[in-house]
Image 1 (tube, helix red, strand yellow):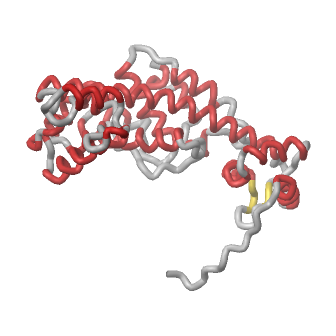
Image 2 (image 1 turned 180 degrees about the vertical axis):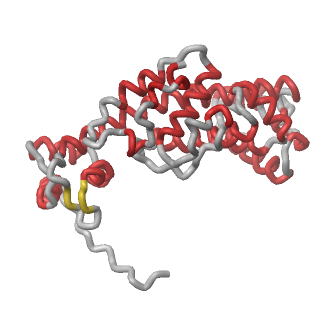
Image 3 (image 1 turned 90 degrees about the horizontal axis):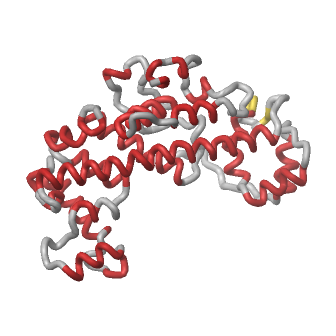
Length: 302
């Protein structure tokens, strides 16, 4: 443990005091009362993540001469719209992934395929997942059951757990992604054909989608985020997917997976229109990893 730590002694500040602090650091605020009103309902700490990109000296927290409260606030609003847009796409992908895995595996191995140990790579993965399903379906705790799970337990004596299509509705996207990755490769291959990508790519990309969904759903900063979970490269996307840690790669795999679900999607057009409204003076390309000519690429036009 480091010996150079110091006690935390920062006081809590009122919105008015925070306005004074921001102005002392060079941030221009044209309407103090309006700014205070926003700080009453959006925490200074949350907005600070957007104001930080307006600073010329991050150590001393001093701002560029052009930096204003409104630019930071508009970045926050822009980011909120961006999260909604990505969440809309990820929601469709998640439902399709859950449904495809349940349908394909149920048809090939029965409605209760997930309790067949021989379908998993490792016994430990099988045991962990079955234990998870027992908890999520409320097997031992009726108060935790969804109505359809409760109906199953009340009506049927065996198998002792509900069928796959019920289970798919009570586990999370992350649970589904981990379940897919725990299956033997032959089963992964059958499922991945739905999305026209390889088995390992689907495992990697659903992991990314889970992380992306959590960022969006929990209101975390998205627009200039650096993602810890990076998508595995794909042969058909070599010129597009650079396996970096910025939003562009997340957008590429989102578009690629949407392509498998619909013959025509307006999502790329909606993304393009929204990105053009980015209020940061530097624009969005460099901070989000988007090439300057990305809209002209065939992948995004198709």
